[in-house]
Image (cartoon, rainbow, N blue to C red; front, side, top):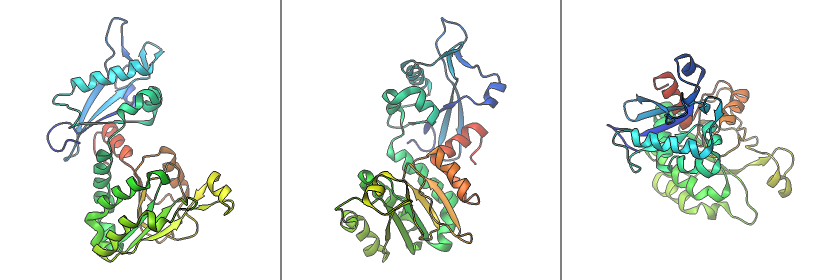
Length: 291
């Protein structure tokens, strides 16, 4: 991701009602002989420059986009952004745009991990930095077991500036038969202990219906009855329903930016703010400021 002067992220999002009222076209071109052009707007939050690119619902008149055609129009955006190179700028998709592209074309536009990590780190600093100094509590909701190594590596980097202040690190994980989680995570856990005297608390997710291995594999997993709070970092694709007491201070950051998880968190604990990299970008380009 590019820092300072220049473009950091190009964010493709659906045209909104506000955009339409501002005379954005519903189609990317007015006449059949024109090239499909996506409109751009530049937003600067003081550290990154975000190019918001609104995607109308139609390519021409009422003709929906074909995935290849939309991908080509997005490639044209990259060529129009001054000074843009692949190693200096990243791209981000709203889920509705990813659905239009289909899996075949959307993979090319997903953000790199260093971009996700950089924006998540900024969100932690802005929304949870002071809270971590006060209560020193972090709750981690790991996602797919096959991705544990990557998630734990990113976690260590995100928490590094705050580790001297952290006194409780609670990590929820999905159990895998014949796997010793302490052995699996040994290299990551040792660093917390030897460098900071911090012993992470590892807790398996619980099945909402029964504790059998068969149900645990196919049923919905939840965090169980263990109370938690502080900074929540969620790497899962599904919401796991952590138990947060009313008096607990908490900030929930969804690293993977799952739209459905925001709705579920608001239904369960409406007082806790939902924060994610995607929501951050969306707020910037749609409201014209960093919320």
